[in-house]
Length: 475
Image (cartoon, rainbow, N blue to C red; front, side, top):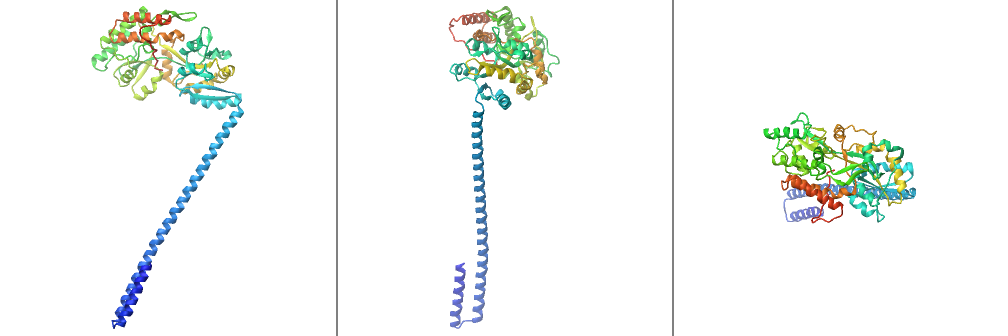
């Protein structure tokens, strides 16, 4: 702005000089006035621009102040919430002099955490739920060291080894025993002792594509006949695909009379190994014959078989409730039926999920009370059943899911998976034998005879030339 006033002053001085020199006074005055007017106009324009800049800077400063205030308020709120949590935790520790800890997987942990408040309020005992991914591996290590849980969730086939090792405490369900399905209680019974409290059951069912097959076949010969016709017409790639060699193929093997261990009044008999029985060999011959004929896939991959069913490449599949979500999402039309027969009805394995008490815990009686008085109720059992695709072991909790009802029908004659420690010696050789059969590397008789001998040697504690591994189920 000073520059414009300076220019005006110079113009005025020039006028005086010009007049003094005899110039045209009127012209000089007019020119000077014009110059002054232009200078004033520029001053006004610059003043407005400066004012706008000042206003903008003020607005930005005001916004920065507001943001700073919000940040401070948010930090104060977070600090207050953190302080409240610390206080709550401290009060909880002070309130509950005793607490019990449960190990659960990612499916059961959330629902048990929701139940914690109700139990704590009713019994005045704290309940800590810890999500542990590899319970079966961690428990036998942590329990003897005094770092294990008071209660753990596990499949019933694990109880034999754990109980024989002194890691699980027997359990008395008392008056609530009659509330559970008898087969689920039997599954958690080892050498006459109830070793856990069941809450869910599961088994395989026979799935069929309702677009390709109107009615499910009732015999394994019919499975091959119907499926073979679809292969011949080009409507299917195979009659059926297998998802494994042991647990997943068991309903076919039992249909021909195969078994794993014989049974007596005391339960499974480890001295009677049935992997090389006539029925198991007959099942192996059936599989090998139809693999060679191109009617049964020579792949034993679980995921591949499911994809083939979901895309309509095969009309039949043996699958469990854990596969329901993906089959439904695929949109393939399906039905679920009991297993086909051969020499007898095909029987799947029955798996039971339940709670067990750590025998080395300092809170054994308290943990048992939690299970028998709080968990063994219709309300809690219903919540547990709704947390996953599994029928409840609690008789009063009936599933409304038609697929689970159908799976239950398919498992009416299911055999509880052996929970005896000797079962750990079976999986590897059993699976290897049927892999050799499917691949056509050995006859069914040779492969299963050798497998049976290996299993007996392992049970007897004899070393084998090659290390045997345990096959995991697709549960």
